[in-house]
Image 1: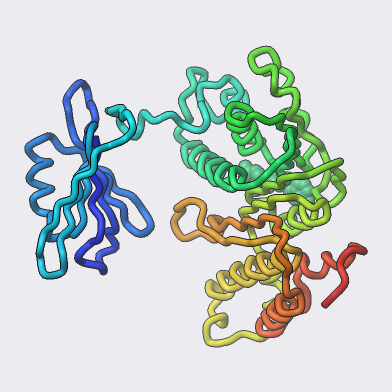
Image 2 (image 1 turned 90 degrees about the vertical axis):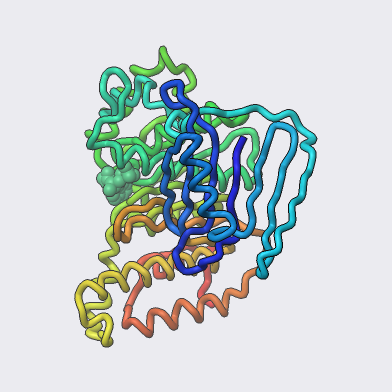
Length: 378
Ligand SMILES: C[S@@+](CC[C@H](N)C(=O)[O-])C[C@H]1O[C@@H](n2cnc3c(N)ncnc32)[C@H](O)[C@@H]1O
């Protein structure tokens, strides 16, 4: 059914695992090899003869552990450092199915054939993602996958209130809504918040058009407002994908003030802090180079955002959410509200130290946090 190669001998070439599975390609039985590197996957398909040759070269020279999963048992080969092999066999308890689909045929989280994707301008009339939209489609699928993973670890009531801040043309809003309404046994109330009236009007018209094919779409709507002035009745999850500059801060603030359980943002154009750093004239031997100043501004902005989330009682992760060549726009901040006590003074001290180190007079989010009555400076 499949084979997993692990424990690489050479730890320096970046290759961590190889996964092998049978597939049917134009009715020919082939084996699909997925080479998992630290930051990317590479896939190759081989026929039976080639597969045996490739495996012979890799076991045990390149990998010390190999598990072969069959319909009835798992067979593991362990090779010690001295080259001593041990074989372990374990009968399977469950009934297994053989999956011969190619990875490309796998069920996607989002179905581009749904009519709203064409109305939104992401697909052709016959449901194919347009070539210049492939990247956007991949990006929103990845975002949905991550949001789903985080949401599954969070407890919600029967209704989940979600707001997409700076929703733009609505791709992410629709994608997450499509996925959640199809896969969650909860009522989803989704609002896309967007400042540009023409976009909001256009998308609400698309929602109207979709109502017949997709009756549940009535629990999604777009509101024309700034994130700052948006006043939701309740907010469980906020998402923001590339809300410009301090709009990301406004989105985080809105989540904090409404006690959102999850705040998930992929920030964009970190101009406010860059300006502050430039203004201070406090450059060092790294930031005296413009490009590095820009990159440092991105890191400092988002590190302080992550710390502010911690300060406000969110367990925070910073992750890379999609592989885009060398762009600061692929960082995702995930804050999950936690009951654990926070040493606010210690976190505030870390924030202040960063502000001082980089000569930042004000960080928009940190400053605006204290405009709310609930937060007093520690
Ligand atoms: C770069 S676009 C991203 C759109 C969408 N999230 C996506 O990734 O496809 C940022 C959007 O945020 C909107 N925006 C910027 N500042 C905003 C604010 N303060 N309040 C509401 N919307 C805002 C812009 O009009 C724009 O449509």
